[in-house]
Amino acid sequence: MANHILIVDDDAQIRRMLRRSLEDEGYRVSEAADAAATLRQMAVADIDLVTLDLNLGSSDGLTVARDIRQKSNVPIIMITGKGDVIDRIVGLEIGADDYVAKPFHLREVLARIRSVLRRHEAKGQSTEVLPAAGERAYRFDGWVLNVARRELVGPDGSLCDLTTGEFELLAMFVTRPNRVLTRDQIMDLIKGNEWSPYDRSIDNQIARLRKKIEPDPAVPRLIKTVRGAGYSFTAPVVET
Image (tube, rainbow, N blue to C red; front, side):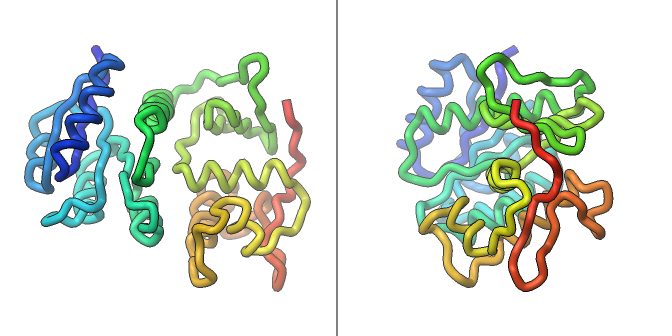
């Protein structure tokens, strides 16, 4: 059966546009314009993924995301304004799986939906996922990061679910092993001009990434803190 997508947006025109594109791709689609309608849909329908506009007008999208996450592990793709960096960070910390910034291209939304669904559906499988011919992959400490698929496979062969920020951070590290990178360099590499000197999201993302890949996050041996300088990815990396 086709995956069931719930579009949460208070703009009827955007809902119609997304619905038309998703249905053309073969997805089943439901809609909600506010928090109450969203929670009703989640209670009565078998939803496989939620696209959630954080600017819902009368509703707080972050509160909706938090309510969904408390009740379900359904994947959430946030839709944010281009400048809503703080909301984006908070949403990822709450547990959203990815984000798309407005104005967006429909092909980008569809690509992110496919990627998040693939990661979610494969999560917990024990069969090792090997990179296909021509796909870049990086092996380190038993892990395999497949850049094209945006997937991280653990030493036991299971997929590790990464948010977009965590994936970009890890990809940045494995392509620059054994280099001390300052916090500002990391922010420039990942976010370009879309950050301020007071943005602490990188530190939070590194802490969360350590919890997922380090044997002991309290004593990290893959992503090490270099006191007074920054961070360094110290594991041997082999590109395949």
